[in-house]
Image (cartoon, rainbow, N blue to C red; front, side, top):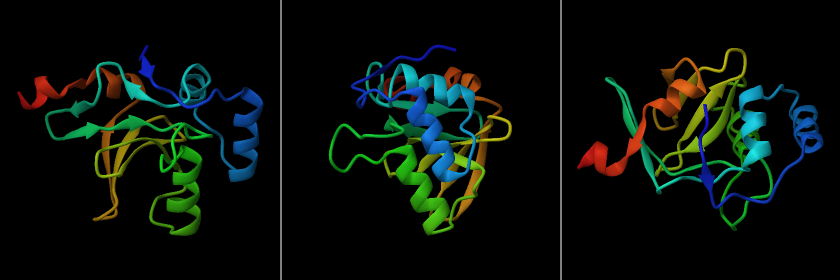
Length: 148
């Protein structure tokens, strides 16, 4: 699986990812670690995209940086996890936000098996989308393809 993110936040190191794991008491999924080491968040090439399956359709605003957001107001995966899991306790501790939709709701990866979920914060339901990040990315299309 290869995705290209543009306009990323400043680079992170493997040591910084290890520090995050220690601080949060979690193990980051290898696929996300690899992605963050190559590109610390950003927009998918060709702008906003849409995840589309037979049951679900939602826009993807951007992939979260893990640390050091490029712009003020841009949250990181670390921020989202601390806020939604540790402080507000509205997201399961085994779900790690990695991208957000236009409403600020996160797409998450289940840390145990890499499955991708959408966290509907209003209904507080986690909607299963795909078995892994590769399958998730393979169902991402342009806004024109989705909404014509």
